[in-house]
Length: 94
Image 1 (cartoon, rainbow, N blue to C red):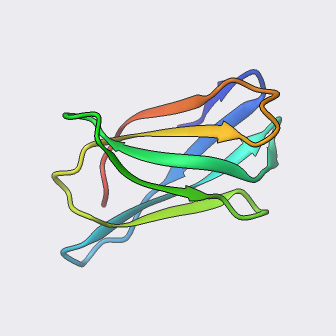
Image 2 (image 1 turned 60 degrees about the horizontal axis):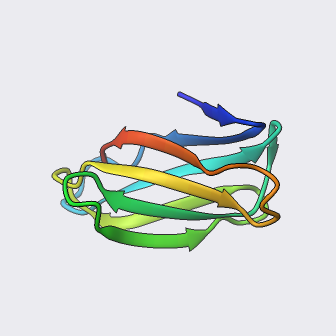
């Protein structure tokens, strides 16, 4: 699933299976071009910030140390502030 908002998209990918601790990873794209962005992972139930990172130049980001019970939403802000934030809701670590 890709969410787009004025050309900035956040595309989570499947995370790692087979371990107690899991992760969420994906790629941030601006007008279909990978970009560096601030990416934050929040716990959906409480709104608590679980982690934040800066995507690499290829747009890749990863949050680790999560469990399956951490239903999340991911928020991305591009550094140039030329696009609105993008939100991916109902993301579950795998």
